[in-house]
Image (cartoon, rainbow, N blue to C red):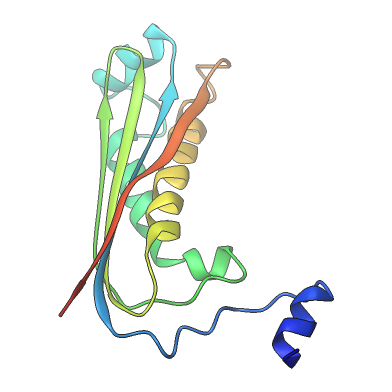
Length: 150
């Protein structure tokens, strides 16, 4: 039994060794939704939420979060992210946030995409909490992840 396997079975946390993997282009896409009251949707539509432009700030929050994922999730690798796209779309029932993250590296970016979505949704919650006490974040999931040779 190797020392690493022994440590794992002892309940020790270990960052996965990805050094042997080839450098590839990796892309992950995720989405999530926050259900809002109709009045909250109206306030966002008219851009009169007191804290400001909910959709734009939520997109920026998601981008910042994706860049900081390895600081937030203890065993995530810091990555060479080359592109992050976050879109917050208003619907009749709330806000849908989608995120796409692309990197050149040896491990995937699904945690970065999911973190971007979750923090974007948390930002909507923060900006609207004064006017909506019934918000629910839901359906946060990975849509896809791909890797391709350079």
